[in-house]
Every structure is written in structure tokens, then in C-alpha cells.
Image 1 (tube, rainbow, N blue to C red):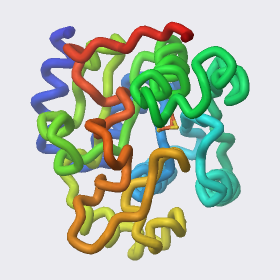
Image 2: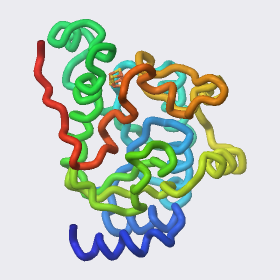
Image 3: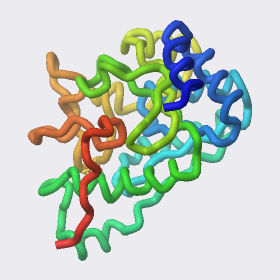
Image 4: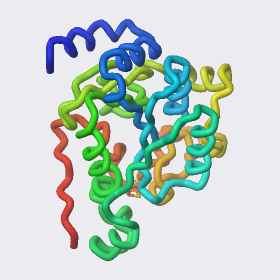
Length: 238
Ligand code: SF4
């Protein structure tokens, strides 16, 4: 990690989301892009970015298995903010994946499925950038608890900005209502965290907000935000 990043890591802990994003735009220009899965946190981030500069860039992992509501929200975002979202595609279509790795890989080996459909396309994308911005929050999972507002992402060898990492869910929602930010209607139907249709369910009263992701298996992350010490899974067909 360079001295400049080390300094930024420490100073940025006193900054708000806008200052973190401004630093990123100033330092990296168009070599910094926002990653979003269009959850409510990502929507806040996009809205804040739009108030700093008009031509910010957003990309998403389009696994081919997203909810219709998510695809519809992406179109709304493009219209409202005047941007073109880049949809990262896996190398394999759902059909080719089934041929090479067997049917319903997500139910037998979700780590491998996420590696193919999310991590690999992201790794290719990040190889073209110097910095990426995410909307993770520290209280979402134990692996996110130590994330900094600006940090060196060893796993992908780029700088990672997490401008709302210290926000609570309540802060996120109050921003959304105050600024009339569009959001996925599934959030109003007990889906606090939204991923692929195969691996997301609504949560019941009293359940952890992320209990609806990969329900029934020991998995809490798709692999994009895991520490560098977690090896990227090997992708080999059956
Ligand atoms: S979330 Fe599920 S369906 Fe989506 S890429 Fe990961 S394992 Fe596959």
C-alpha cells in the first residue's frame, strides 16, 4: 500500500460520504467507478455521486439471475441520473454453465457459481481501473466490520472506497426518503438484501437482514468483499 493511500485511509475516517467520493473523483477521475447491485445502500451512493458530478460511471454484475424488479430499477436509474450502467456479463450463459458444471450449480456449490458469475467478471473489470466504490456497511456482516472508508483492496490490487461504511440502515433509509431516491420495491416486501433469484428469499420478523441470502448454507458473501486471505475459488467444470 502506498504512503498516499495509507494517509488517505487514516484521514478519511473523519470524512462523510461526499468527501470520500470527492477525493476519489479528484484522485482517480474516470479510472474510478461505482459498483452496485442496486440495493438501497447502492442507491444512496449513486444519488450522492450524482450531486458531485454528472458523468460518474456505474457497473453491475449481471449474473442473468437477477429479479425483474432489479432490472426495472436499473432502467429507472439510467433515466433519472442520465447514465448508462455497464452490465458485466459472465463468460458462460446460464445454459452453458449448466452444460459444463451441471444443473442448478447455485444449490450444490454457490461459491463456484458466484465465482463464475460475479467474481470473475469483476476481476476482469477491476483490472482496468485504479479504484472502485462500494456501498457496503460495517454492520452488515462480520467480514465487513473492519472495512475502512478508503483502503487498499489487496485481493483485486485496486483502491476501494466505502463511503457509507459507517452508516446504519436507519441513516440509509432516512436519506432515501429525504431525497426521494428510487429503490427496489422488493425492500418493501421483506427483502432487506437482494441478490439473485435462486439465492434470495424474504426474511421473517426477527431474522437477521441478511438471513435471506444463501439461506440454509454457510455463506454470507458472494466473494467480492471477502478479505484477501480468502482464496478465490478455482473454476473447473465437472
Ligand atoms: S448469488 Fe446464487 S445464483 Fe447468483 S451467482 Fe451467486 S450462487 Fe449463483
